[in-house]
Length: 142
Ligand SMILES: [Zn+2]
Image 1: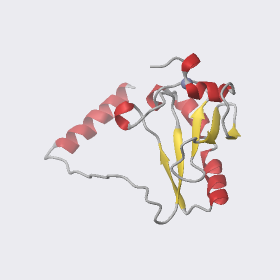
Image 2: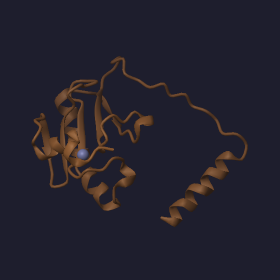
Image 3: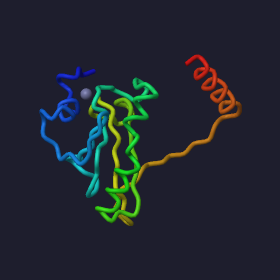
């Protein structure tokens, strides 16, 4: 895990590393991804260093995402995209490369060639019931 001094996104948030910033609030910064999947591909990040969203408080999570609808609308209007994906990876196994929470806003166009391998599965008998109960219990513990 990187500390804030060595984290590229902390340095971008602080302004010590340049970025194409499009948006800033007291809690968050948004800037164009340097390696975009599409025109207007933007990253929204908390100014404070968190590795994954489960590290964040509920309050701060809300503050960081507060203006996401407005940001997404501006990106849609600017790019002419017909839709967008909001992508947020937690952990290396999930595809997270920079260990500072970030939300990708990826404009989508018809036949843009982007997509997923969405290999949907089905649950074995009883497994979904078990998971449902255990996740509910974990939430009750807090
Ligand atoms: Zn950071």
